[in-house]
Image (cartoon, rainbow, N blue to C red; front, side):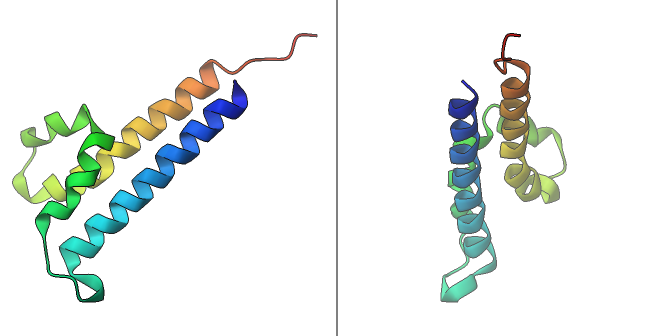
Length: 90
């Protein structure tokens, strides 16, 4: 169980880093790519359901909140892994 949980966390973190890199490259226009606000589309499924609550905040904070929303899910996954960790019996 511990190993599977660690693998899930690592895969989710890798997807998040990849999606965040695509977002930054697209928004800033790094490496000669055109600036494209739709580059953040990969962050949306990683940040569900927290993405739905972003519209409550000011529109200038939306890109930052969209980039940070998957961190909530990553934290919750880490917490669940810690809570349901299989303890060796003595």
